[in-house]
Image 1 (tube, helix red, strand yellow):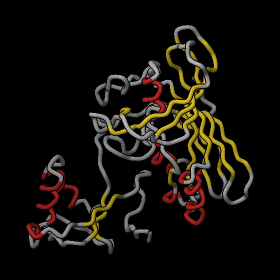
Image 2 (tube, rainbow, N blue to C red; image 1 turned 180 degrees about the vertical axis):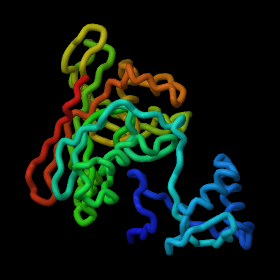
Image 3 (spheres, rainbow, N blue to C red; image 1 turned 45 degrees about the vertical axis):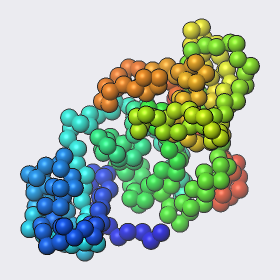
Image 4 (cartoon, rainbow, N blue to C red; image 1 turned 90 degrees about the vertical axis):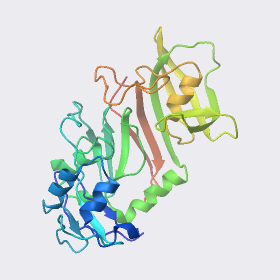
Amino acid sequence: MKKRNNPLPLLNGVKPSYLVLPHEKQFYGLPLLHFLCIRFPFVGEENWRRRLNSGFVVGSDGGALDEHTLFEPGKTMFYYRETSSEDEPRIPFEEKILHIDEHLIVVDKPHFLPVIPSGRFLRETLLTRLRLRPELQHLNVEDITPLHRLDKDTAGVMLLSHNPATRGAYQTMFQNKTVWKTYEALAPTRTDLPYPIDVVSRLVRGEKFFTTQEAEGEPNAHTTVELIENRGEFSLYRLTPHTGKKHQLRVHMMGLGMPLLNDALYPVPSEAGSEDYRKPLKLLAKRIAFADPLSGRERVFCSGFCL
């Protein structure tokens, strides 16, 4: 895919967003402001007017757009997302850089920190923070891209690419499932199961769009669960996912009658924004291993966090 030329620079680590104006005849000849107010009413007309007149909303040529600019179908507008400080409090945990080379950045992500900007999180994300780290300024920080997913509630080791020329080789590892990830978790003790136990089921979107649930049908998710240490009421488990479905580990452990300690989504979702920083989800991406697609050598990275 051809890289889109972005006329705006990073702003405090935040990469500009873009929107391609649709071919919708009802907006032809009307102000761009009118379209934005109809399409994104939650932003509000005064906010759109202020943003359009700020000089930080531009077209592909870098020319500033304003409240008098007319809607042009197919035109691309570039802009910076905004969140208020009330919507985005400081997350009081720090990421740790484990490794940097000419292709990869390996990071230990803390609990509660989202990986990429989305929803109410913009500045307090792993990606935005990394773009501001002094020890990474010798790189083209705009090119830093996560190679896989990790829920904001989960802590642990993550791989990111900063070299577009080799990114595809590392992405292919995940597509071909030649990356081995191991997690640790704290959950209620069950000594009646024949560990290691393989959980195989079908996972689908839950009743709430942000959740996952098990359903009848052909299995599409597989997790191996091992008991590492019996600690009384709760025990330490090793979880090995063989597939990568959303919330797979959390749902499989709940299905065994062992919901993860401090899980804010399972079995009952908590209200968004009600995070208790004293009670992180007890799930840790402890280890990631793979054969490097460029050198062929085995590489292993481990989280320094523990549960």
